Length: 164
Image 1 (cartoon, helix red, strand yellow):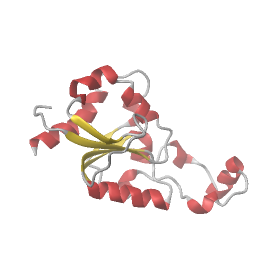
Image 2: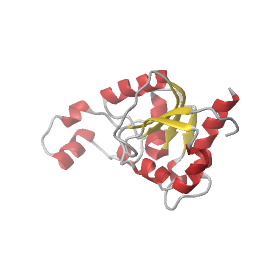
Image 3: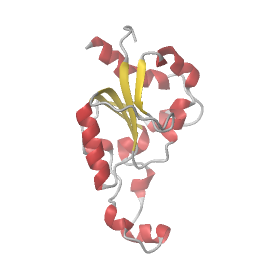
């Protein structure tokens, strides 16, 4: 980033394993270069404190959307964010959760037993099916040890913010 403006940032997790958050945080040495320019409003794996605000410059979204309340939460986040970044395979494609073959309700009963859970969820969908995604960080670039280019993928929307 070229400027010194603070970028208000929120990290939202939907239907996912939190692996993308963890892999990003494992890049701590690389992230230090621009950490002082970010004001975290929400980042569940970093802190349980939520400072809250009506607007954020950058929303990082992890996970697929699989429940009506997630759709509502995502749409509200999109209204609040100048830039929305879909992070990882689940946010971009629906992830492995969307690959359940056959009857979804039966698969849910097989895993969870008799429960009305199947009535409260639908096949996981990519974030882009519901809102405009401004930038994407593919999950396969985050797997394993921290590649040098991952922090740059997060920095790109920040650079766009500085350019106005």
